Every structure is written in structure tokens, then in C-alpha cells.
Length: 165
Image (cartoon, rainbow, N blue to C red; front, side, top):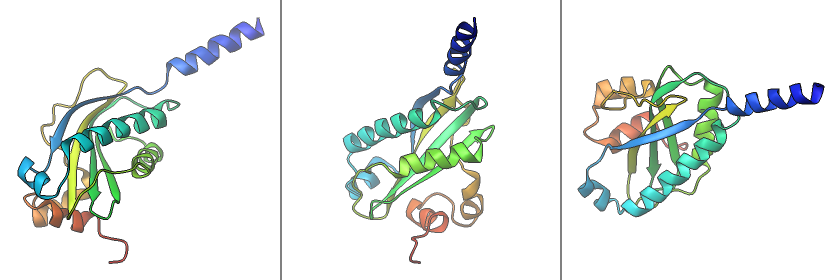
């Protein structure tokens, strides 16, 4: 009987793992800008699949609240990666850091100059995606007020300065 109860508990824990789903892309830069930066859409798509897989692995053992929003990723020409979440309700800081670390450890696509920024709709434990049309992470609020998002390179320097600067 103990074995049966333990088996049911194990199955219940496994069934309650967080399930991330990914939807539409949001590109902060137009196709001409991406071409100027030599960012291949095929390489970006491959990278996006790796991002989704990494997040799935991070959240597989997690038990967190349902949430919807965006995962924002920036790749700089020095091959560094930054990650922001714009989720409602906010993801627990532990899992936000784990997601950021997992994505930052991936091999990025090439960018010749500045940075390329995109977002993915993300839903955790819900079939519905956010109705918010444009991602805007809280960490960007002050910089967006000052710079706007017409020049993503300038905005990225404001929200994500190089470590040696």
C-alpha cells in the first residue's frame, strides 16, 4: 500500500510540472536592419528553438503559477546574450534567473554590429497567450522614457551596458 501511495504521489508531482508554450515572435528591428547586422533569420529561428528547449528543461521540474507574457532576448555582436521577462503575473525571481542563465549559456546567432532584439510570446500552464501587443519589460521603463525604442542599439546600451563600461 505504501508503494502505491508513493507511486501516486510521484505521478502527481510529475503531472504538475510547469508547461511553457511559445507563440508569435515580436521583432524590435525591421528586416532591413537585421540584414545590415548580418543576422540570418534561419540562424535566429534555430536559436529560438534552442531557447524554447532550454526554458522547457528549466521549468520541467518547477511548480509555479500560470503566467503569460513575453520572453525578450538580445544578442550582441560580442556574442553575449541578455534576457528579460515581461510576464503577468511575474515569474518567481528564482525561475526568472534560471531562465536567464539557461538562455545566456546557449550559443547565439551572429550579429555583425550592435544588437538584435526579439521577443517570443510565452505562456506557462495556460492555453492562452497574452493580449498585450508589445513587450515592455519593467527593467526597461526608465530607458524607454528617455530614449524610446526607435533605436534599439541605444536602448540596449542603456539597459544592458557592456561589463567593462
